Image 1: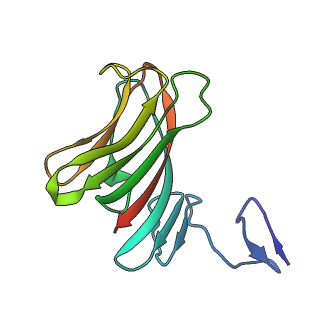
Image 2: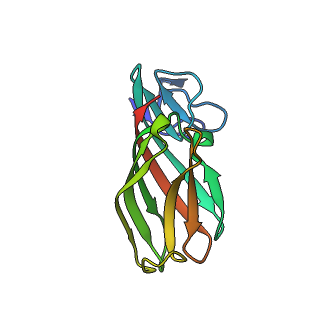
Image 3: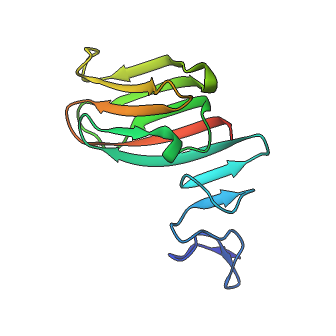
Length: 144
């Protein structure tokens, strides 16, 4: 029987069958997960993480994701106004971030936008320009 506990969400007969690291991050196929859920498939993987950004704040994506070439799905969570969601393709060494679709209930003016920008050194940043602090869930599917 598998039970959920506060120490580990997956236990069988008192022993962890899927151990979490000390930050409560779950890694499959790796020992040091980057996101809350980080799955390594060899040369690629899948990662889910969450970040809270103040208005006009920026986070370097290489600090919260396992790679710099793949598809990002970004969505604000627990928001009642100025919601944002979208998908972005980041192209690693090409220094391009292509918005596949970015939707915001705050409008599309430059001052009311969530953006992923190249840092022109094969890294990327996420910037909150939605007018207030927001929490975002980010999924990444791409190269490690």
